[in-house]
Amino acid sequence: MGSAIKDVTDASFQADVLQAPGPVVVYFWSRQSGDRLGLAQGEVPGDYNPQATIVRLNVDQNPQTWNTYRETDDRTYDVPDLPVLMMFKQGKPAAAQGQPMPLLIPQALLDMFIGRNI
Image (cartoon, rainbow, N blue to C red; front, side, top):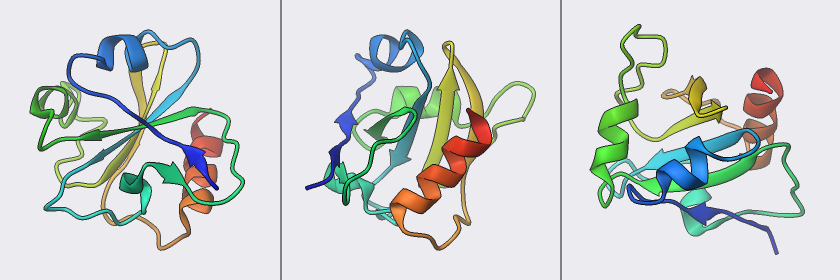
């Protein structure tokens, strides 16, 4: 059994991500883009304990949050195509990984992304 990934919504994003005590990785995905990491199933496969909270947000059902974070004013984290991993620290975007994503198993990609950005 894997580590559970919490679903966040437009309504819960503030509390679950922006006000979280530690780093949070948000997996933005949609039905149209597909689930290239296998994270839309609700868990990271295997025995996995990351250094950040991992949540997912379906942008088809929660467009407000996606539209807020898909492009930043300084264009640092512009990620127009899905799926996207975005790390938030202290309520602000700190890193993003969009397409093309490395062809790694989910745990390896998350470890690489989190390790680079913690």
